Image (tube, rainbow, N blue to C red; front, top):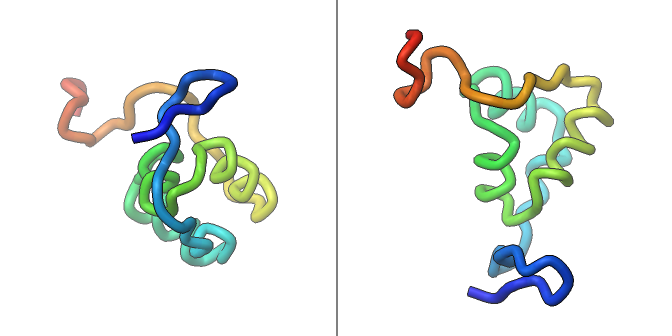
Length: 77
């Protein structure tokens, strides 16, 4: 895996998937399936910042940072 020469973060390899630009697809993944911005970004091979920008562009309310109630790693479910 390659790293960004500026920040050292891992770069996502492969061609980007632009499904996230479709408001219904993005809303379905984010609200319907409860995927995080990072999870959607990995699917689409883009950064979580890109997903955040498209959520805002499509007026899809974003969640706060942290765990999502009901996910397997959340002990409060």
